[in-house]
Length: 221
Image (cartoon, rainbow, N blue to C red; front, side, top):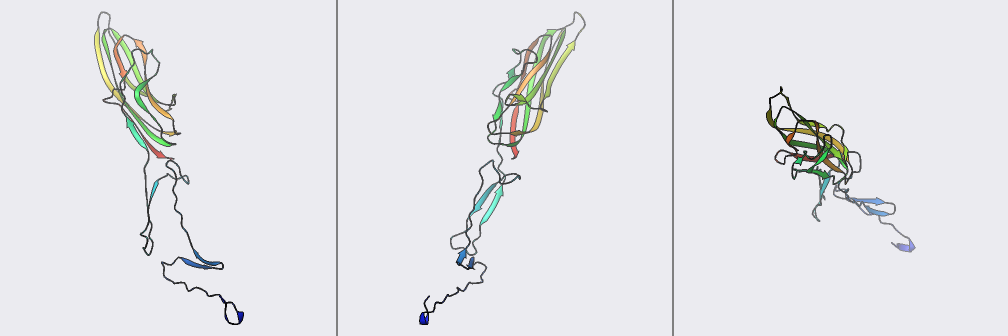
């Protein structure tokens, strides 16, 4: 500001030492630091650590000190499906895999998923002297088998002496759990098949909706 005799004076502001004060004197003038809060899109991360959802609660306009409340919570995507119907294996040839109807899901976002497939099935054999069937299940990723997911579901076999016959039937269940890295849009499905053709099966199925379930949970990016 102009002073006497044309002199110019710079008046230094008096800054309060109050801890609520964020003003800072810089050579070019007073500075108030500005804080910008930003998050990341679901399914992404700013580092290699597991991503979380961050909740931010702003302070009241006149609060002093201005306290921002910040919290984090895990909100991983996941879900479960029950087969819409059991897969009838009788029309399939031995060794041919078929998808269990409705026992699949599409990954909503990229990441590592913990996937569990619980499958129940049954088979019956009418009166005959010999019979042998073995059923198996597996998970697939976009149609390709997932290593480590193959499980035996059940086996029924009997061999009698000439002239003797018997009928038999049984139900069984299995379970497989895998950690699988998925991209958004990947399809995970559960399949079943049977081996051996000795004898004639009256019924042969896998994926009974009352006892089958496919669950998935994202556990990491």
